[in-house]
Image 1 (cartoon, rainbow, N blue to C red):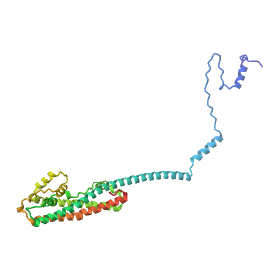
Image 2 (tube, rainbow, N blue to C red):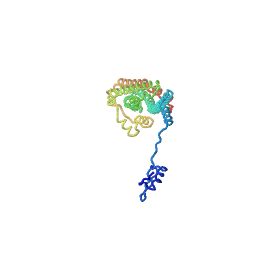
Image 3 (cartoon, rainbow, N blue to C red):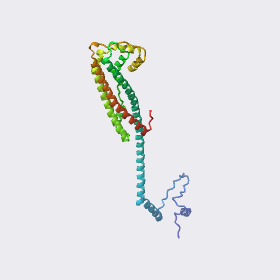
Image 4 (tube, rainbow, N blue to C red):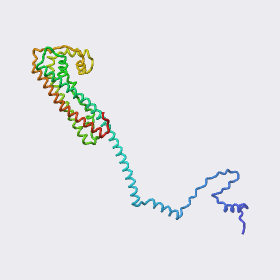
Length: 316
């Protein structure tokens, strides 16, 4: 066969080399040219039928859930919500119990203080009733011109000292509990009933105090302005600067001093009317002591006892 004139002697060698080394992997740079390394391309191998089958089965296994799986997930969700509810309920219970204890302690302190005051007022009223007996008896048949040392002290305590013997119960904590709706913290039905009872006792006590003051305003005050010598009390207080007038009078009774004074306007004094005025006032005082004040003291003591038993409070 005749040779091709365009074929060079080196061409058969190059053709043989191309068969051994693929053109996309090796490029022989020409003489005088700079060779740049090209990044190798990622060859994506087609998924075989076996790989696709495995992938298909895995997806199917995760995609379908039976009733046990749903039931378990529901149970876990229910338990989480239920536990959260229990925790919140327990926290509310702890907070309510703490508030109940705080209110009980504050109420106990207020009632305990009032219990002491009420007991002192009761004792002082009994002493005042004795002075009223003495004064009414003296007005009836004793000398109105030669007065003994005991006359003006009894005169003063019986008809002048009003606030000293008046018991004003405190109900600040009790009103706060009622107005704020905090009475619900007390779970004891007996305690709630007693708190209602003492509210009534407090109102009755205040009404009685008002009645006693009205009687003092008239007729006692006009009587005292006409027949009482106020210079006796003025001289007494100059010698004794104690804040409580009753203490000043008691100190005078125990001392050797004798401040002489007379009954003013004695010519117009009606013995029977004066004695009757004192005795009527005494009966009002006795009624207040034996009813309103006594009822308050009894209810107060019952509440303190319930608070001590239910909340382990200190018995003072």
